[in-house]
Length: 110
Image (tube, rainbow, N blue to C red; front, side, top):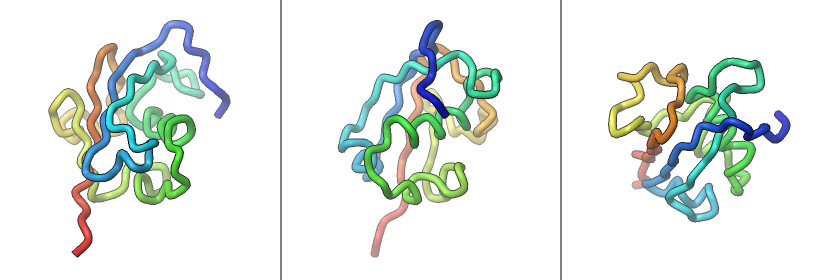
């Protein structure tokens, strides 16, 4: 995946809580501008966002704490504009301008 051409972009806010921020430079909130289409010419969706985050924002090499087989790992709650992503179509949800995406790790050692 080459660096996306921003051109007409889809600005969104991405947040990480529950310890996931440590994978993203210990920064909880990120402003991200995605291209309107993914590498296959399809509208940018949550699946593309996850790939984008892993390639361009994740500074930690422990990708397996965030994704398994390029899918958000079990135990991470994903909210799209405060709604569970399961209600929005999960990875197929097409991102809209000013969406707020929240990833919350619910995994705790014990």
